[in-house]
Each structure stands twice: as structure tokens, then as C-alpha cells.
Length: 483
Ligand code: 6PG
Image (cartoon, rainbow, N blue to C red; front, side):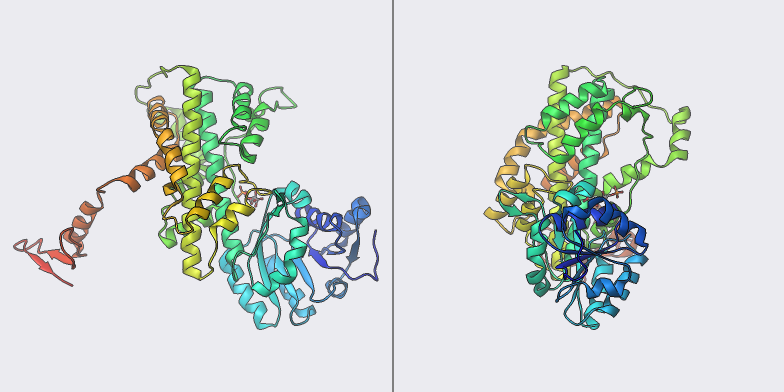
């Protein structure tokens, strides 16, 4: 239904699949929605195909679109992240009045969001960068939404976003995350965790396929079963579906037909870059970004495959198949725990750096539904932060510590097996090293400090007394205190 005289509670600019699904979701949940797309064909197509789902107010110019919104006006931009976003923000800010709210629902880089928020605020309007997760299906039926921006915008915007968000046990999967870029920052880290989660699932598959010699359909069954235990999650669920799928043309397992070069649009890479900038060891996330890059290094991979890089003496797997499958499940769970723990570390560091005061419990709550990394164990994560909001690391929570005690032996066995078989398991292995590094009494960093002092007089601290010291390496090797 469309009514040009009715004012809309919310507007959507950009009606590609995500935008039109979001607009339909608003309409289906009782909101009158203004819709606008640069080329009007998409607007017409939306109204024609779905106009009966609720109240839509279509416009062909941005000015009409703005005029069709009730005040304070609220418009969500769903265009391709980057220059297009800036152009639409500019048009909206021009046509809107003071106090109106512009929301960017794309995957924007949080530093762009901080910049845009400043610019828009200087023009008297509010700007909210909102991470929206759940893909096309989520946009239509209930995504997880991570809005940043000024708290007062949330007062107006909150109820409308709650009306379309996913809902778990009566709690909508949306909350105000923090000022300016906080929402997009948190969405970025969500995607970093998503990359790691997908990679560890991939490593488990690889081990079952080429270590245990199982066929995709059989592995699909295994994943299906795993989805009812600790690993219960959307990504495990869809993995079972993808592995069970046959190629419609050849009848072969689809996974064997798909080129094994993983793409990326950049949010995982941003998470890794930001981890480096903040000095947070998000090894699992960074390794999963590198794993995608390596998979797409086609020229190097084919040169290496053409017999140039020897494999060494590969030992055949000599374990009971059922035990191996269970070990792989546990290794997957352990590596996944590390990825989430590291992601939460990055959010804590980012929140401190940018003064956002992000509450990790909020994320554990809203990520339980709608988003790509939704998983049953987020309830456990929430409980962990409920018990101690200042946990030094998620894996130090008593429950997860206990879980890791059970997981550690199988995890080591799997990393050893992967190494012996010559099968890559970069996130399984590097996450185990991270775990062992954290718990190590002494790290070789002491030696690195010695080397730095040797070649660059970079000084070092002593274990036995305070102060900063240097050895006269090129002289008499005496000790001097520099501070
Ligand atoms: C989501 C997804 C979504 C998208 C990402 C990842 O939360 O709904 O993360 O935002 O899938 O852009 O895409 P790439 O794998 O292409 O980086």
C-alpha cells in the first residue's frame, strides 16, 4: 500500500537487495517507510513486488523523500560503502532540518564514521553509523543491529530499530553501542570474528576430508550433528548445508566445483589492521585474513603445486576415525573460543582508545540472534561478563577455562596430526601458540630485548629491580642504569 500524504516514521535510501529487504522489514512491522533510490526503477520494482506488505511512501527525488518523513526525520542509507555514502549524506544533510537523523547502515570503516559524524553534527544533524548483520535474509526477517552515534538519537531511533531486529528470548538484538564510530567498530570486529569462525570450520573440514578421507556428504552429517552441541551456531548449520549440496550441473559435491580462492570485501582486513594498530594480538582473526589472501595467491600456489615445494615424509593418519572426528570437533571449539576471546579484547582496547565505554555484555546479548556469528555459546559469554565485567580475557572466565582444560589435549593432537599429514591448519595452530604464549612463564621476548639493546641500545627492564638498563656491548659490557 502506498499513500503520498502519510508521513513515514523511517526512510531507506538505496534499494538494492539489502536496502529493499530492510524497507520491507520496517513495513511488515507496522512502520510507514519512505523509500528512495537514485534510479527510480528499483523503487518501482519494490513497490510492485512488495507494496502490499505494508505502508510504503515512494519518492523520485531526495527532496520529496525527505519531505515524506515525520520529524525528527530518520533516514537509513543502504548504498555501497565509500564515496556513494558521502554523496548521499551530503544530499540528505542539505535537505534535512536540525535535529534530523542520518543513519549509515553499510559496512563503513569506523574512522570514516567518526569523520562523518563530526561533519554532520557541524551541520546541525545527527549521524548514526549502524552495523547491520545477517545478510539479505537477516535484513528481511530480523538482523542484529549495532548503532553508534549520539545517545539522544538512540532515544528516537531505538524503538523503530527494535521493531525490526531479531529477537532472542524476548530481547531485541539491537542496542546503542557507544558514541560516533562505536557501532561500525563493533560490526567490523564482528566480521573479523566471522572470518576466523569460517576459517576454523574450513580447517576442520579439510582435516576430515583429507586426513580422515571422508566425503563431503558424510562430513555434512558430522557438522549437522555438531550443530546440536557446544558448536551450535548459524555458521555450523550452513556449513552442513553447503557440504551436502550437489552441483546442479555435474552432480558432484558442490564444494569440489567451487574454486578454492576466498574473496573478501575488507572488514576482516580492517579488523586485523586495527588489531595491529592497537597492539592487540588477534592472531586467529589476522591468520584467517591471511588464509583468504593465500588461497587467492593463484600464481604462487600453482608454482608451488607443480612440484616445486617438497612435502617431506608425510605420515598417514594412524588413529581411530571416530576419535579423530571428536578431536577435530574439540579443536574447532577451542580455536573458536580463542577467536571470540581475541575479538572481545580488540573491542575492549578500541573502546578505551576512543572513549566509547562499550559493554561486552551488550554484544554477547545482541549477537545471539540475527547476525552471522550467532551461536549458542554467546549465552555463556554473556554469563562470563555478568560474573566479571573486567575479565582480563574471555578464556580466563572459570567456565571457559574449564572448557579449555578439556579441549587442550585433543587440540594438541589435531595440530600435531595436521602437521604430520602436511595439511594446513593455520588458525588451529596459531591459536594454540597464542594460548601457550599467554600461559608461558617465560617468553623469548627477554632475548629479543637483549638483541634490541645489543644493536640499538634500546635498553631493557630487569626482573629483580626497577629501572631501565643498558649493557655496554661494544665496550667493557658493564651495566648502566639509564632511568
Ligand atoms: C554480516 C556479514 C556481511 C558480509 C560481509 C563479509 O554480518 O551480515 O558480515 O556484512 O557478509 O561483508 O563479507 P566478505 O567475506 O566479502 O568480506
